[in-house]
Amino acid sequence: MLDIVGQLQSEKHAFTRSERALTEIVLADVDSVLKLSIVDLAAQADVSPPTVTRFCRRLGCDSYADFKVRLAQSRFVGQRYFAPAAGPSSVHEIAQGVVNGIQSIIYETFDHFDFAAVERAAESLVKSSFVLAFGSGGASSMMAGEIEARLFRLGLKIAATDDHQMQMMRTAAAPSGTVIVACSLSGNNAQLAKALTVAGEYGLTRVVITRSASIVSEQADILLPINWQENGDIFRPTPGRYAFLATIDVLAQTVATRLGPSAIASMRRIKHQLVVNRDGDDAQPLGD
Image (cartoon, rainbow, N blue to C red; front, side):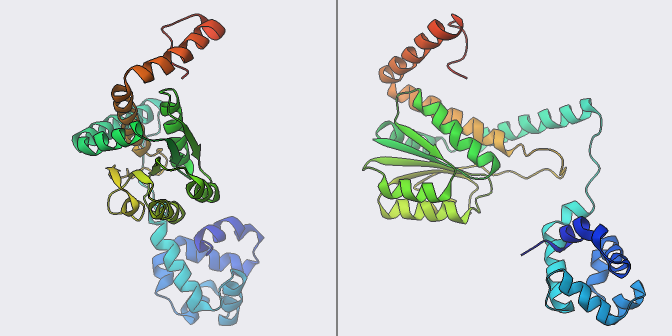
């Protein structure tokens, strides 16, 4: 279903005079328009009720009533974007807000860390025959790639994908002993939840990093919960992804520690090639 407010904002320059008048009234005060009858709205815009009906149909609505329903949905979903809170404007203030947000969420994540769950997740990865890393969307896709980057260097067999159909196919073809590590910042990714449901039917172990009490978390055999309150500044990138990165790093180092000599041997081979073929500097990160 299209976002009515977004549609009005993007298409208003192509509207007729009457349609622009209606658009200006709607965008100026959505809450008030939701309380208006078609006659009242027409009177405010100095147009006829049939013009309002044609306006609604141009926007893909069946009627004025349908228009108000969709407008209410747009108002609810995008509430923070109608009157965004004033945020910092100078680079120093922006940087301070970003860094403070990152610090706060990392400490908050540590305070609520489920250490026993991380231990179980690490043990399952150590014993795995193969690992699949799943995520989709912006940050969650990045997390899937990050999991692959952290674990392959420890000698684990792993593949990452952010494509839902490929996730389902890889799940169906996964060998016995496969462990899935899935990330979802929102926890509301229905297609990822479905892939994890299928994984459960095949008896695969599912390590899930996501919000508690979400549709994705319900599919976890081992849940690593990350919960945070999103900041009100719509321009600031979510600090939530740093909590995910910290959790992945803790999990990766725990796995490395449990693997011991085999992880060290794999990392040494990688470092040997980097030193010989890249920069000759043993102090540089391992392929980062």
